[in-house]
Picture 1: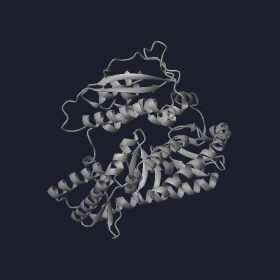
Picture 2: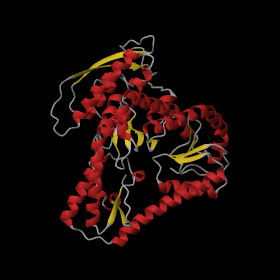
Picture 3: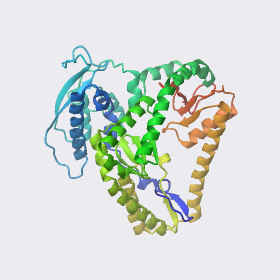
Length: 452
């Protein structure tokens, strides 16, 4: 949606003016979503399909919680009225025998608490503690903001936690057992690891084929029904969870067919939060309930208006820079919401008006050529690696940069590595066999050990 047909030079703003695009590191709404993943995993309505009453209660409470968290982030926020919430929390192995809550025969318990907090961090801690969930990951997430240990609200004594593998697949958190296994196998070579895990991955991949076909069917069906350009995922969620997300979107399309017509021609992307991205993709937060998705689809016309304003702003900046095109490369940075991207451009434009700083077009064009050349090199090396290893699919985790992927591919091509006919290979930061049979290898693998 942000394409320019005229041949002009290009400028990546974040590379040229990095200090204008950095924020002060505070506990943000995105941090809150990440910190609440264990909570969402335990209460999300999609896991209560066989229990409509409890599903409805959780759905209503999540809507109230969403409004509460949004109000906390408003600049005009002063204080909020106490908000009482009730959730049915699914049973996990971290619930000890001395817990006061009683589990039903269906494996969940009712938890009631009242929110009367004044900031995001204390709200997140209060929710996790109220549901007897660990807060240790919040400390690691927020360590750069609060060097001192966090003061916890009604701290629940630490207990050994043993999560099911599906929890790590759903939330994207690392499995500590896998971390311990990696430490114990510090001397593991790529060849030996592939030899030891290839058959297990192949069996998992074979077992996942029916579900993969179902995922493709659901994706094609929804894309055709809603006339979407594409459906994508920001994270490497498991196939089962992707199917669940598509089923949720399908139910919403049945309930609100007219509203979803606003997404015609758009790309829908399942991600951590709902909104519209800087490149115009419709982002559906996987932790949000249908009410939030519906509101987003209803507001799409206003987002399209903002897109037009943004394109005009890009043209104005381009004019001030002597015809250099402004581009936003989503693959090179975290996903920005459309409002955030517009706000950054607006700040840049106003400062540019005041400074009238002269730029040398050739140096800026050279920067963009370097970026383009890296992407082209990466694409060529991926294709060559697929051919050499006989892979069905070869891709990288979002945390791996293009430079790291290029380095990994070159060594795969230069060194003797076992062929993996028909397999799915993901370049990540650690060794792992995913639940659907994808093989994950660290980008910095070696035939000695991975670089520390």
